[in-house]
Image 1: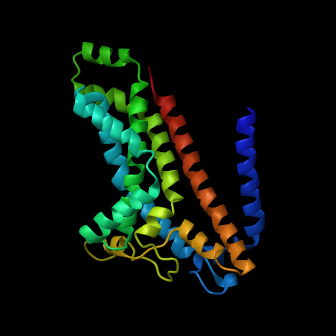
Image 2: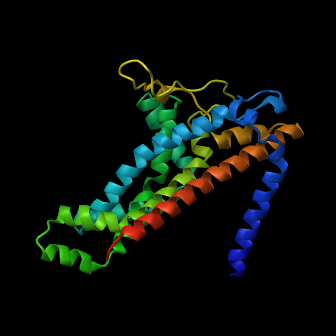
Length: 280
């Protein structure tokens, strides 16, 4: 309890300090203005739009692949030396420093595949970063399902795929979602990988809208656009000597923490709703 109280009180104190310092800057203009050399006119429009865009690509890249890999390793993969090697590597990759993923992405996504310093490269980089977390969380959630669920389904003539689809995945979904949100919460605050692949510290434009009014109604040009994210914008402001930029950084930090807490609250609510519908 003492250790828990120390951690919570430290977070609350830092969060309250950011809120107090940046509260005066939290107005509509702060969310709708681009960065500026004048601190009173600077905003986080390009940063929060970039963060949402990168997180969208990250989720599309990591979540389906991570959940599928976790299900395969736990339910379908044969127990042999190759599987053991894969499991050890997945576990170790969850603890690799994020800068290593940035260097890997710089060589693979930016130069080899030619994606450039874009939203797509950033999303795939952070997707690699959280992929081991999603796989490990998925496997742990599946392991928590009682064995009699499988035995009962097999006893009634269900196939392995039917057992996985209708019982294992629905029952383990609360735990899987918890792992997904933990991974996404880590990704949204990462700075080193996106700096490595060339995130801009000052950007005064937005990516093109993904939806248009003309056929085919979907526009993928935003994936190749330059970008910045909230942690980069905060880093830019804290490196400036003017005190007013420090207030902007505090306000941006407050917004980033609120975004992260909102993701966790959403995960808790979804997990609660799913657990209410599960019938053991």
